[in-house]
Length: 127
Image 1 (spheres, one colour):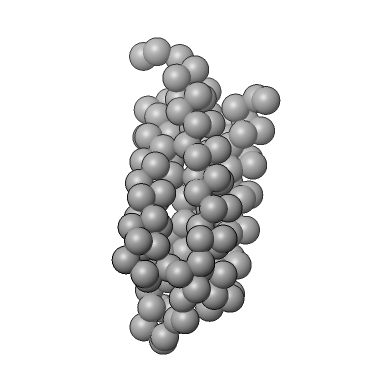
Image 2: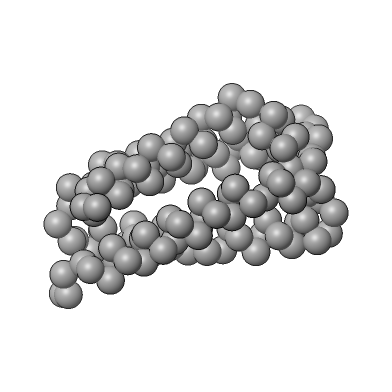
């Protein structure tokens, strides 16, 4: 797959996830066994606005040939996907998330995208 295609898919998945979380945060968290209150709902929606912004940045950078800015996007995306995994599983261990079935799909997606971002980062032209 071309890097441009990967970045388009990553942006689309991130944007769709963010829009879903902004519109229906409670439904999403219900799948993890969490009932939201007004405070956590607002925080979750604010975080998803940032995720949506990252998706837009990723989409706009999809044709970049290998600039320093593209490298920064890749590094940030790698960190986002790798660091998110233990946060979710620690929440599960602490009983905050109570349904493992809600964590597995997200973990798989994080792993796939982390591998993809690492792969394409390694293929960027050396500067």
